[in-house]
Figure 1 (cartoon, rainbow, N blue to C red):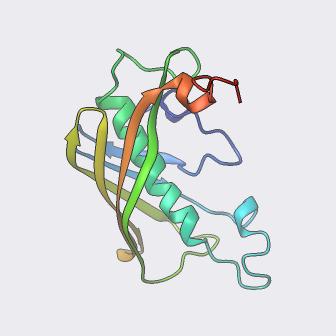
Figure 2 (figure 1 turned 60 degrees about the vertical axis):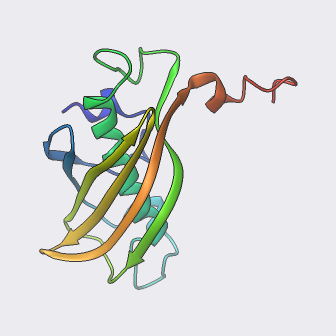
Length: 159
């Protein structure tokens, strides 16, 4: 899967390095923090660990890849060419548990499963594993919205 084609995210905020497998209901990806990432600078000096909010975003980006690959409202969604849609926008985090840490050099396996879809709202379960051990799990919802809403162009005063 071409990650840059499917996601609007770009470095330094693109957190997924590779997609291992995917279907209409599940996606498995990899994130490989090296220690140079912006989110590790100062979190924590001398003992860098991946922040929980970044782990949440990793699962969100993986779910966004699943949506754009398998549930796009337009054929062959291309993040640079397809206009009019913002796919996989965060709507809610329903549950998140952080059980352990990820550090530079860890191979973080990010797994998401689509558990429900109602119209343009997608509910997912996610988890991240390091060396076969689950270090976090969550449940969250993403939504496909009109691109103008994301840009704020729907507001009367244009802000």
